[in-house]
Image (cartoon, rainbow, N blue to C red; front, side, top):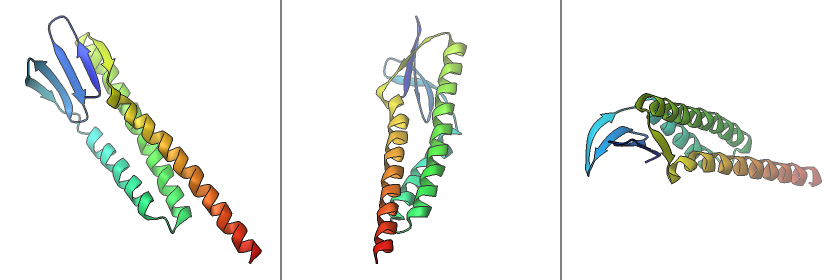
Length: 130
């Protein structure tokens, strides 16, 4: 789960698939947030494309920028949804460790973009020497 909501009577768990009202071990209510799944799928697909386009560094950098944009949208949606849920349910939000994963993804995208730029500079410098 990304977040957990605690009230006096109920415990709610929120993940990418939806919001579950947990009573003991059974999930009673499931409210889906369908727009998180395609956004997450686009992030995964663009990241995989960037990994396998290692011979086309300029295109790879553009794909990483596109993935960065969708990651920012995903993070915004995620925290906007959790804030709205907390207000609706009048509960306290507890972020789980999974809430940090999109931020780690952004960090790794920044590292990848820097490394690709450095590789491109080395290739251009080598071409100049030839």
